[in-house]
Length: 155
Image 1 (tube, rainbow, N blue to C red):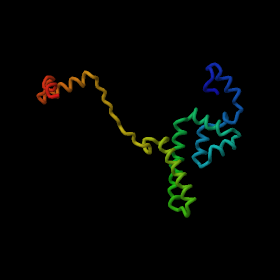
Image 2 (cartoon, rainbow, N blue to C red; image 1 turned 90 degrees about the vertical axis):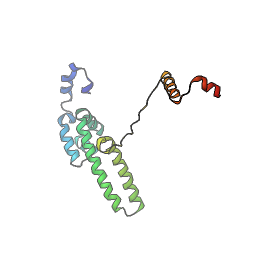
Image 3 (cartoon, helix red, strand yellow; image 1 turned 135 degrees about the vertical axis):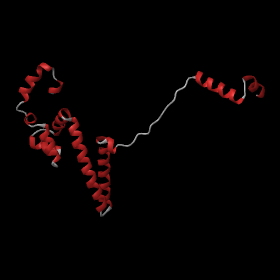
Image 4 (cartoon, rainbow, N blue to C red; image 1 turned 45 degrees about the vertical axis):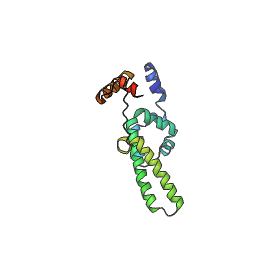
């Protein structure tokens, strides 16, 4: 993998891989085909590479763009699932639509977190030392007009 190689090897690797199918295609062209509705498996088959190689190219060269394209596809899938839920005629089609919608929602929660992610509850933890607790107890005892001797006598 060129991105993991020593800097001095980069030119040699580029020459060695120049005739490989993925070296001949830009990531933007792959993303455009994906946006047009083709699956990664279809694009990979057409290019004569594995879909894993295609994913790696996108993740290495354009991770943020890939994330945006995946989020757009997940949103499209979710909208289609909503229509499928509305038009479901039987339990099987309803179940399929529901599971597909869950998958699309799961993807959206991760790929478009600011919009579709779940709000995380805020938790505040206050840590106090034993000395602070003792000081507060003494303060409260003073406010109540109690002292240690009075408390011992009452017990």
